[in-house]
Image 1: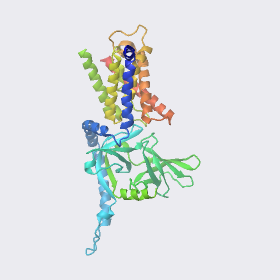
Image 2: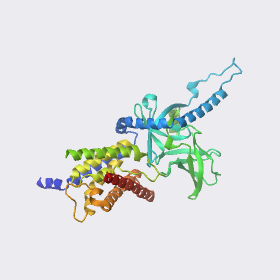
Image 3: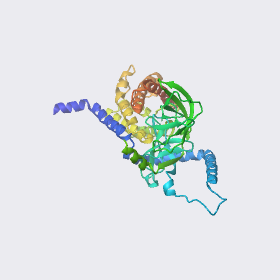
Image 4: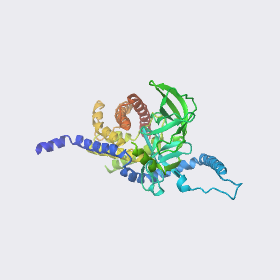
Length: 273
Length: 168
């Protein structure tokens, strides 16, 4: 007993150190998975007040730019409405059966917390389960792909940013349809890397890269970026550097897209696996 | 006693605010993120009991983690920094030892001493932090590059703050 007490007295610092490091590593391994990070969501509730204030200031300073963007988007939407409405034949008109036709459901939100300076970046948006947000929904900025929802609380959601080493996305070259896997290499927040494009494919600088619909998360044909550079990598494939459309440093207003037919697709695919 | 608790409380709050509001938003080319909050661990009195030092390190790291949404990352790096601090102090100790009841600051022990002390601590902290962040040894040298560059920036800011404190 005395020996034990002596031992404890002698190494008490080491013991405290080990206990504290143990707690830290427990947090590190369990908290970072984000899918079951209840603690994180509740803790984030506390810091939201401060983050919200910082965010408000930032949004205010960027109002002019946001206005221009919204105006441009309005024009584009009006144009597309103009194409849809048929004015010259009032007797016959088509009825849109929305329950069958609509596949993707859009929700707008604001990113209230964002980071770009880590290797595994996440951002928080101000919509949650009460607004119909679920895990695995796609997040787009006004210009292109931004991330995927990985955790929801009642009124907030955490999304894994495209700027995350764990983020992988099926993407293709718009001009010829060849698809590969797109991910971030952790270097520059403006660029991502598209791999698995075979070398016989013709690639040009400036080619548009867009999403494929294969994952059932992102709708088909959403913009990701443009080819800024490519080089031969290994024997068979290109390594293509993609200039991202989304400016993550200014990420603020985002669209969240839910695929209403996702379960149907996944269940069918499960049958053949 | 009360006085020094107040003083360190103030330093603590100021450094955390600086880190969360200013330095967390700094990013040059993906390589440089200064982490200046570690300065709080540097400045605590020489004779602080080790258990208190460890607990304070833990609290500091945890608060930074909460604000940057990265559970455990800063906590583990900062606790390690708190654990090695007594050894670092022993390694760099000035020729006539430490004055009883003094703070390890530039004002008392001079620039050269403070520089080597802070550099050792910051390197230990940043190395742990950046390798825990990527959590793998692929891209070993790129992570090392980030450690070196970020250390340079953190050191610059820490020395600036120390000079400012001396000037007052």
